[in-house]
Image (cartoon, rainbow over all chains, first blue to last red; front, side, top):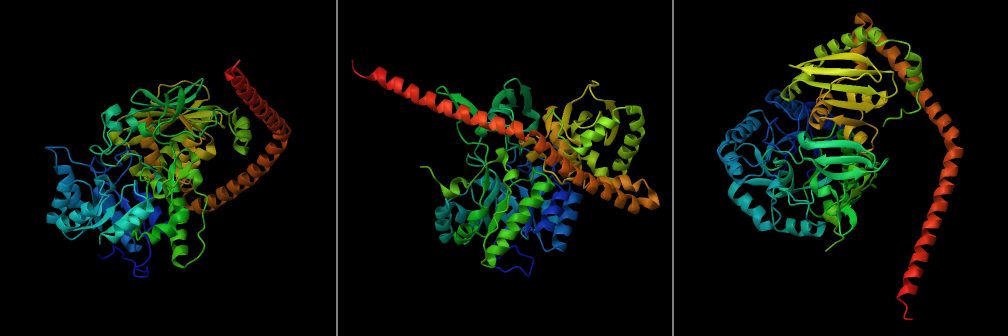
Length: 339
Length: 217
């Protein structure tokens, strides 16, 4: 399976750093900070970060691709939501335009769109989004054999030994998340946001849409609300978080706690040698909804780490903790400490 | 954050109290027009939201700024601190944080998570504004200096020197501030240690009491 790599100076054995670009400015920032590859989406419901003020129009994507290619980086376009029945055109157009505008790959979740891309945009690579939740060699190989999937973004539910074992049974490149927001649910199958707001990350591209979020200062601290429900309350001085249901603090059995997951961010910076040993091809940084300052700091830190790893040097665990949600970080399921 | 940080901007802001908003308004108008011309994509990104009004409360300055956006255009109205206005959202932060958001050198989410920036009202509008500003590649000094025409470069160089001097003063003021509050901090830490000890003793006593109640008589 060939790599996306366009930069001839990059050894084929190195880990590919795949970085978020919510805007053209963030794309340029990511490329300048050392991203091997950036991923982005169009300004509509075809991608899973359909936030207001974010994403690319067609002209911006064309310019972004040119900038990235001029600097030896690749551009992946996320078209990773599931089309609504009877309204397939926006998704078809997104695939057609990504190919026409020079993107290097499309990141897809819906099996029908994968088939469409294979038939209508055969010249660009097809990556299987984490939203497709493919986590077994059989599932991944099925996509590869039938739809020519070149890479799969693995769900954040696998341990590193499981990823290593999976890589032994597939030729498909694997990409894993190494930093950023963490989904505790199986991606592409979570309906918590729909349940409270009527908006789905899978179909409209937004989890806990900002239009349904409110923060209110109360005597007891800052209350975060989603769809009118209080999801969390932060005491004075306590780091706040975004109100997603899975990261809410609820009272149960007379105890207030994070029932599902604390508002923490994934950070595998210090585990990169083990990640490389598991045989993955690419490292993905989450955060298309975050700003340029986040992109620059995280991409630089990971690029330094990838370069150091390649040269057999000590990893510099740079201080990026201040960019994490709730000010806390975790290795998530990669280093599973529960059963 | 409702209490402004101890900074040169705060001291400067106290001195600026005597200046009425009417004096500042023409400068704000000129800057808004310049941003509009130099960054046309900024307001275009906000179009899907429709007309929106944001009150930007710079906590260490004596003024607030009412940002009005409609039909791909923006305007700013300068208000005195405490003046009320009908708005969709209010954003409150020190000047340094707001400048950082404008030029993208500060991560808005991180500032919000740590509560250095607070807002009230329409979350979608605030998120959209943040995203649009971040994507606009604004260099505020550049935009201000552009108004000086052929003298733009020297003007920018002078402004950069002033900002460096302000940063030095800020560091000095931080040291001064820490020195001033250190006796109070030490007292608070000693009190906290005492509270921790008392809580521990209470917990031990409660445990002993529970055990004694469960003993057979």
